[in-house]
Amino acid sequence: MSTIHQLSILAYHQIGQFAAMRQHRANYCDQARFAQQLRLLQAFDYRVLSLDQARAGLSGRLVLPRHAVVLTFDDGYESFYTTAAPRLLAYGWNATVYVISGWLGQRMHWHPPQPLRAEPELLSTEQIRELHQLGFTIGSHTHHHRHLAELPPHEQRSELADSKAALEDLIGAAVTHLCYPFGSFNATTLELAAAVGYRTATTCLRGAATTADHPLLLPRKTISFGDSWLGYLWKVRYKHAPTAELKHWRARVENGDFD
Picture (cartoon, rainbow, N blue to C red):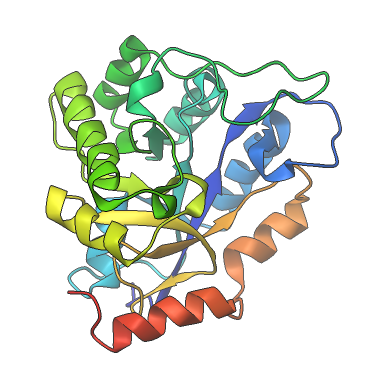
């Protein structure tokens, strides 16, 4: 065991069987490839961490294993319950599923319909309660999946606070992890997220999370439909140069713009 200075937080969306595609590939992962990816994590002796463990490790309060990942699933699709969760339980691994509290049990409808693709169903209240009882982390993806950076502060606060309150009432436990829909946030979003009680928030900023990252600005690596096993390992294992946007937010953190 040794202190880890960077951590791969992986972002998934839907898991299942899908026809070949050219667009929106990051929203899909073939279930056979997902099963293979879990086998690779086991074969290379990776520890799958919860976001609470990741936060503690990146802040220096916990010594983490050298090879570790965090698994996150955006939007709260029913396929997490039917396809991903059973495979994760077989390994005894945690994952965080970010759900949209205002759309539980409905169908995804924030993108225009795609030819030959049904609009997927979202997790029901009963499925979310069961997932929580099984040990999975339930996180917020806001109340209505809106672009937060485009909203005035009072609407941002409502999206963040209403979702947190609704999910806590649903599962009977604290909900302290957030994912920004569409990767949309601004400085006000961070201030409001902290004020209403979120401890971590994941973004669409690409890269490995490091001790330089604010816990409400965690970058991730998106797993896409076309990722081969070699491409998957490359995403998990190797360092990536931070994007210009990630550098910008890290500079603001270093300058003390956020507590």
